[in-house]
Length: 302
Image 1 (cartoon, rainbow, N blue to C red):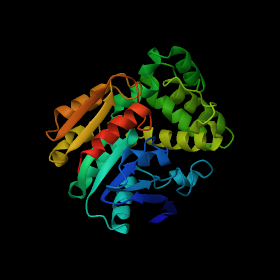
Image 2: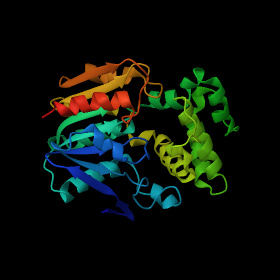
Image 3: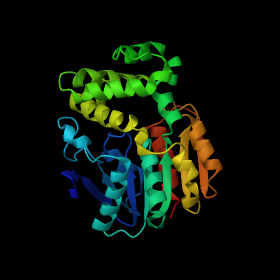
Image 4: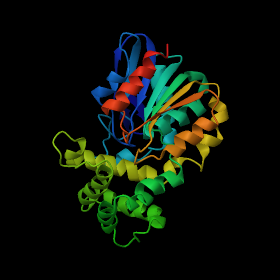
């Protein structure tokens, strides 16, 4: 456990030997899983998994303690990565990020470019306001029945995608109230799962755990309601800070949660970046097609 102050203690774990690599999980609030080790050859990499504030095995846990949302911002997470780097005596490392983890990886690299050897980003999320509106609003045009239920849970907010910010805020408020938190978490996670054709009650699904649903939804809405503490287009506008760092992006053409345009535009302004486009709709780094592509990339980095 890494004590980062203000009551937060972060869980981390390592396996393997060789070049140091850090895994930044998605969400925000998903936590790491053992499958993240499969993205690297552990005979060539020492891989560190880190559960970000409030989720996974870090404490306090957002599933049962709202204190997990205090002192929990993107800048706090960037600072946490630096504290972890010092704790485990890493000079410079490969950073892997998946989904929200790609946003955090980019933000960390721009803050500490001298500590990043290379980046591998899968299911690229630049987390711009248009992307949040897409995930929580515009994509409802493709999933109208699921979106109707998602919007109906906060009937005081218009179902129009233009009301996305108000809808997220309404969910966040319900998720902070113990009397309404579980129902709101169920509705939020049902929507998130629906756009990938999933079911929160499916055996083996992480969403099947009501506590996971509370923690995940609380952290996601906490971040989304504030535009993740990032300025509009911040990550693309500051790419000059990391233009020299090799970056390998992997993105599915029909990824429903993160439109390909974000990765495409980022690749266009980053001289040291490459973009591999997969043909399907895979998003998670732990989906077989994505895992295979990531592993093929990390195998040739060194």
